[in-house]
Length: 283
Length: 301
Image (cartoon, rainbow over all chains, first blue to last red; front, side):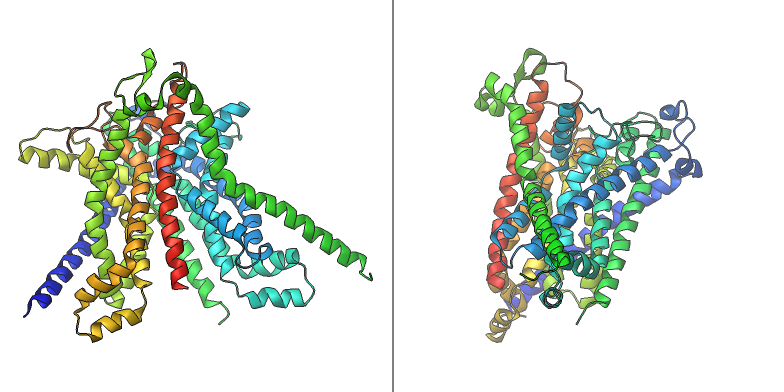
């Protein structure tokens, strides 16, 4: 064998080793979370709110955080969706092809996507102080909606962009205005893809801790109104892991398993929907 | 004009919608500017009180005495991010090249979605793994070499961050490498080059800018990451002197203290400045990487 073949074989071996290493490490993480989580999981974790002495290891569960997370992530995704639909339709229907404004907005949204969530959290808290709002469900929803807005906009934009321009032109030819085309043709054609984007945004929103740290607060009760603080799963994990009691730390592992399953399920569902979408596309 | 009332109404709605949606779109693009302006506005009190130079390069962190030197936190961020990059870049590049160039279809289509799926796992989960596995392991491994550490240190944070940015770097690098046109590979192979020579001398040269952009995006993700780092870095207000020292990166500082120490004068302004520094660094990295990627996209089209 000449030198180049040896080099090729060595590099190929290294690459395979690196791939194995990375897949192995990621697998190890999932294994750790599942094994430790299942050991600590119980029915009452899912169905009860914390009782007295919960943080010393007594009875109760984390239903408050599960429901709180759904409220915060669901509310935030809804709010961001309401803001993202006009943006995406404007970029794709009202802006001309190759429009500089559209390119600039897409660029700025991408930049916003890269902003660390702790910065969103601090900025959200800043706005809440300015309007006199305390840490609450509403504050959390608002801040997380800022965080998921660029994700939702760009994910929806990618789908809507794929719609062939012939479809829009047929609609115009029938005398429809841009608004009618946007609502009745574009939104309908992209509906499955839009649902995928919404699920992606929800999965991001439910898992993020830094943006709700200052803004949503924490509470042992399930929030009854928008102005009450709400517990969230990531913070439940973080706080319980920070206690010195092994029983409470075990609950953090159970909470971590619940959160992981929720995020993975959301992600798999969005993938499955995404595949269905391509099956129905126009050739 | 013989337009019916209905048509006139439709056109009116259309124009109104165009105006309203245009305003909303422009506003959503400006959010990032508004955030930067808000943070800057809140940082003004501390910038007036202390020079920017002493804020950035002083290690005197005594909030009660009104001394805010960010150097320990900046150094903490640099150490942790640097460690993560050293650990993440080589295996990520090797994996990405393998997946893009060598891997049989079956492996590629199995591994890539798996890695993408893991990109969505929340950072607090990586933090739990760090506390459960990485911290005890680093403590034990350090013991073998005769060092003592609590395990909550730069190295642990670097390992956790490196694992977190695996999916980011791999996903982008695979896309970039696969976007290199097939013809230039064939040209090289037909001249008698081996596959690795082709990758090294042709494909990677062509993809260099994009791969660099992918690494920079991973870097900026690591720099701004909060929860996982907060859980494993040790959080001691001191510039780390080695991989086994505890570090206190900027995001951890903000997460631990903002919103609580409001009674100390200038403290909230100092936290806002910390956010502004974080945002500034991440924005610069992101914008540079994006500009490179946009140029590449244009080249391909």
